Length: 417
Ligand code: PLP
Image 1: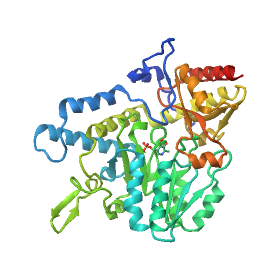
Image 2: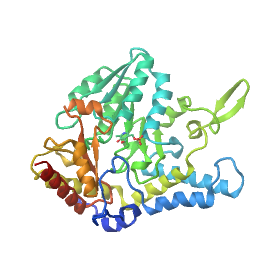
Image 3: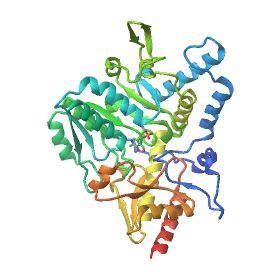
Image 4: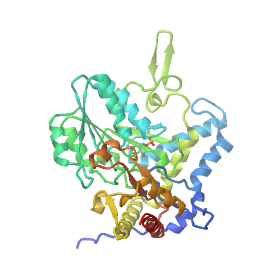
């Protein structure tokens, strides 16, 4: 007999919230802070804040060079963080996880290093209109410098990738396909494993922007099969200035360095220089050691919660929020209807009220959301929008936060009636 599929055990949000000191604050009217802007940057649990502080308090030294205890401890912690990140995204080899500052830097690294090596005049690069500027502009610049063509896979009015259009672009055998795993503006989840297979079958190298997936879904880079995967620590409960580029070893081995200088060399003579092995080849200069250590602790925190449970929690919360918000008069919700294709991002409009006015009134109610184009101007244009208001969830949000959001939107409706 088939075993019934069980939902993972629910997250204990009250206990989780207590782990995040910043959430323990209220405004002058006594309203608890409701933080719904985790797609921009998540909050950090005390264990992450403490790990970074402990590094500075007890172990601060430059890594990989010193033979004294501080430097050895700092090196061990830094390399342990790399192993933790590798386990978190199921990277087969920790040395293929390169510490960078953020997703933007990771994508630029690939665009410069791999891109200038492989892209020639007349080649085709494919991105999507779901992409954040960070996964568009580096490819625009590469296309311009190399004389290549950049094509944008379109999206449907419902905020999904236009599969026919992307399929037709793959028929043209692009050299590169870069796409988001989850759209920061609409929450759309892209079936990146399927598109990676199709793009690679067409001869493309594939980069996945995982800035919005790694914090919210179980990520398995080996199962996705992509060539490169980028993520930002600061969206994933980790410190600002921490991020990772993962790449297949043969790809990274064959690429020239992005930045050059100390730390990434094997031997320097007046006649020339040879490069260090991975990961050092791509980590020029002194890295953000405390930030990387914090990232290692953050991924362990999420692993302990269980990424299946995180996804299940945020899916249920999204379901609740869509149901609650669509009952409000004059509200327009954007993004896919199918919860299996949608992460915890709710982009919306309240009648004709400008999204910045909506966000300002919500802020008066101590509900923090974002308004704007979300660094997705081409997507906004495609959907005939100027901006949206966006609420986005993390492990510390629950239905009471959605209720506060809904009440605050009711106030917007009242004010602008
Ligand atoms: N890609 C996506 C999908 C994002 O949402 C973001 C940030 O919002 C980025 C890339 C850029 O991230 P960062 O600013 O950390 O480089």
